[in-house]
Length: 288
Length: 284
Image (tube, rainbow over all chains, first blue to last red; front, side, top):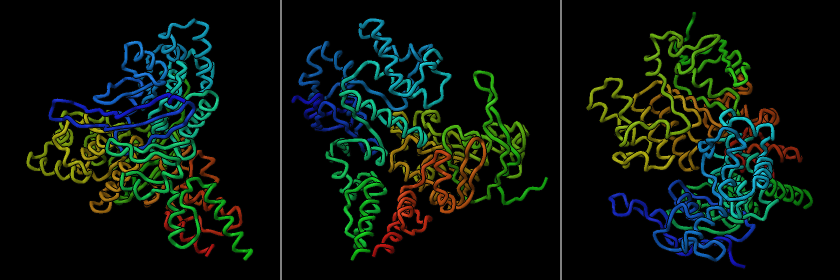
């Protein structure tokens, strides 16, 4: 099957021709399948934000190619435009981009530019609001009357309402309290399960990424340094720490226990996983 | 009014209410009493809307009490004549560094505060370099702030405060926009400022991990302080914290869940090392 998104030898240099010229990303070969949930992690400045902006044509590669369903997105103006509707990006702190008079109009802004009927727009707005947990009674309110967490949900709904095949979120939980993070992540998981959309989520929270995604792509110094399941990635804890990333606390506890001599699998990353290992060790110890 | 000079901040019966769009009164702070010792490192946890930012803004007279009193180094924040002096004593760092950048060059941004204090240029030079080294941004001193990452900008904002040499720094979710390494750098920087220079630190955060090394942890809910003590003592109350909408560190959560299955582990084992040792002691 043709990957929904693919990059080949993707490079981007900023400020070309000035003393500040630097490569933000180099030689990125990346593929995402339809329906995949991918986590992207990397230290600040590792190139992950630059990377995602290439996936819907907001940035043009300085070298290399980006394909959407096998077609080069820069092949024609029409191809670029189509990609921008099919690949939706929710930026960091998207609540700062709200501008309409009502929540409804704000969510409807994207779909309105897609030449679809008013009925269809209405349906999409209501569906998107529901996905992110925004009550229909809030739709006629000004987005500026909402709390920070609600504003963020509205901004995410605005992208979902465009019905993207690929939904990209840059740190959707940043700055929210644990309850808010968890709830937004639940909404995203629900959206992913209910649609066949590919979801690519950039995050710094290892715990968050571990429980949600099928695959993790690790960026380091503008390149993809790792690409695998959460267990595969987190078992390379030392390399991650060298890149300025931390491994989940649970993985670190498992690793320490192994160093102390207990037969613990160090690719665990959730409390449940480690708990069940420890419970079986305890049970085994008692039985022996 | 009796003031203990070892308390850099003393809050008495502080109340503060916001008026919402619908014209309702929302109580943000409900009769807070709190003393912060000079030289201590105090972390404040609470979910959004718990009042922790409102409390922080009372600590350098950005907000003034509606009821009660706030004293900074013995000075009443509601006395307008003292506001400038109060802000020299207590510097504030906010969540979003973009809102805190004023200059086009990093070192000029850091120099902005001391310049406004009328400090000698040679001394400013020294302080700026020193502050930038402390936050690990010295090599970026001639860069343009807008070309830096969020984490780098935040460290520069912190340098700008350090350069004013305050007695106390209040940081309102300074790491919310940073990645793990940036977070660790900021947290270890403020711990070092606290240890070496004796600067009092009040750290408002949602990140449990950042509170583990504090001397004292306050938990806020609905405008009130609902827990106050050493972090390892506060985190023992796993159920209560969850009711407040906060998570406990994964170490505590794991121990809590294992104890429910019949392990008998100490809940105050907060660090990975302590937690692993405690589990090992039971299983080996």
